[in-house]
Each structure stands twice: as structure tokens, then as C-alpha cells.
Image (cartoon, rainbow, N blue to C red; front, side, top):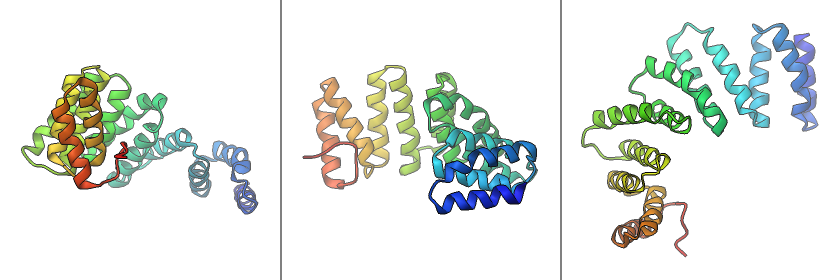
Length: 219
């Protein structure tokens, strides 16, 4: 059954119809969930067809079976990041990311992903506590990582419809990393919306000087 499903999947790949193998692979996986060749083939298929929620679920199931800490951490984080790719999946992302951060409390990428999940899932107080602690741990350091955390504070403020706080955090994030064109563009747009022309001009000047890719056209 396993060999046949894998051969059929390879055949469908050759004719550029990988999704046609999905039903057969999923059936074998249900019947024999411990079969690693089927697991890996399904992971590949889900990546090919963009079935991120299904892949995230599989990775989460796999993580529950793994004792090796580093591998379990990677599976949990990847699962959470995949759930995070859709708004409806954000609530599902919280549990695996919380489990991952218990393993590595200081992992920057996991903190950012969990903050995103909290914000989209409406768990704003948890997002604030997480980001506040991470920002405090960075002290006065500047650079892309502190800036990314501060930008998430701006995202949290936006979710709470607090535009003044959003403006302040975007300004702080840009001070931490003046090469980030996306933050500069967001700050310029919000400042113009709020009538803060001085801040908008400063952000636009950063965009002009850095010439980095951003979400705003300078034309």
C-alpha cells in the first residue's frame, strides 16, 4: 500500500498534477500514521500545493511524537508559523508557539511569531506582556531584531486602534533600524494621515537615503 501510493505520487508529479495523489496519500497516512515515507511525501505535497494548514497540523502531530528537544522545537515553531499564514489559523498557532517558546524562551523568531499570533487572535494583553519583556531584555540595543519587536508593538497598537501609540512605536522602530524601508514607509503614511508632517518628512528622508525596498513608491 505504501509503495503503491508513493509510486502513484511520483507518476502524478511527472505529469505536473501532484494534487491528484493527495487522496491516496492521505488514506495511507490515516491507515498507517507511523509510516515515515508517507509522512514526508505528504509534507512535500502540502508544500507544493500550498496546503499550509494541513501541513501545520501534520508537523504538530509529529512534534508530539518526538522526544529530541531541538527537533521538537523546530517542528513546533514551523507549525505555528504555518498556522500564522492565515488569519483564521492564528488561534491555532498560539499553542505550538507557546510550547516552542517554553523550550527556547529567548528565541527571537518564535517571540515574533507568537506576538503575531496573539495580535491576530485578539489576545492583546498577552502580546503586550511578551513584547514588553523581550524589548526590555534587549535594553538599549539597536538593530534589526530590536526594531522588529518594536514594530510588533506598533502592530499591536494598530490592532487596538491607538494611532498615536502606533506612530510612537514606528518611530522607535525606525530609530533602531534606519535601513528598514518598510517601517519608514509605514511611519510616513501614518504620520501624513495624522497630519504630523515633520515626522512624515523624516521618514521619507530615510526612505530616500536608504533606497531600500519598501511598501511605498517614491515616484
